[in-house]
Length: 388
Ligand SMILES: Cc1ncc(COP(=O)(O)O)c(C=O)c1O
Image (tube, rainbow, N blue to C red; front, top):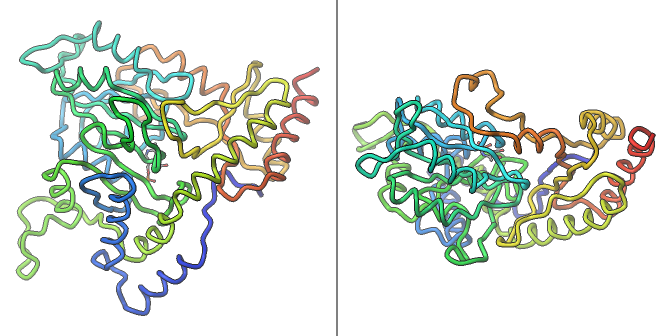
């Protein structure tokens, strides 16, 4: 089976994991946790990086730390992995679903129009005209190796007291190239960035995530909350309701070995992208979804889109029969059962992308031969079913 996105482990992963076992340091307080965090800081240039069990937990606690609570509203795109929407709902706030652009990232223009036409301002705070609830935050996921350039939106958010949480789960190693965000890593433009190191990400610690920020108080609060809000470890004094969400030394050891290869992984994924570009050109109905040119991408996942109307699930099944894993984009969140009741804006582009986009195998170690095999099968499928 050619998988969608598989990790590759080398010698250091084994070496560091064995070191944990030999030294008995497997818990959340082992030395690899700090080493991993320092490496995240070095690469992203974040002032603070705190490792935790997942991007999901970082997203949930980010909103909590920023004070998002009952009756608040949070803007979030419908096309994204479900975690940020769950994080909003777990904080008892209400998601308002925004559309995406052709590249599957938040549509900035439509979001600005929504703010202009559907909200009002009182005491420098923004309220939804329809519900009269305060819009307190915006979650911006940087998806599939691309990123959202949100300079105009950032200015408005600052003016209207809206916090920005960047879901950078998929964008580790992605930097902006243009002013005013030039050389900034995704996740460090808004108030908080959340990274994921789960198994399908460009760098993995098996499971794991991190919060990155340049604000000391946020990092400190996050560190405190994920370690049971412990104020005195000798006498077990806890002055807040905490969580057990710290990253273990074992996971950090794996992450520390992996993260050292980020430049290499990026380079390999870039090559894969250009190999696909060459091969997809030979298909009849498909084209590659490009990465935005204002970013230095990590080329995390290959996405193609079709110009011909047909049920894309047929192609997924065809590839599966030939031992190739592919998948549609995430089922749009506004259509998910738990989120039916929340407000939706015009989501026409989300629906178009959902029906026409397909994710293809993108592991860093994919060979030229495997890429050709995937694309040749797509051509075969076209000849068999679409060219009739
Ligand atoms: C955009 C996005 N956000 C959040 C997450 C959640 O990450 P984690 O698995 O580390 O909780 C993912 C993971 O796939 C993701 O792709």
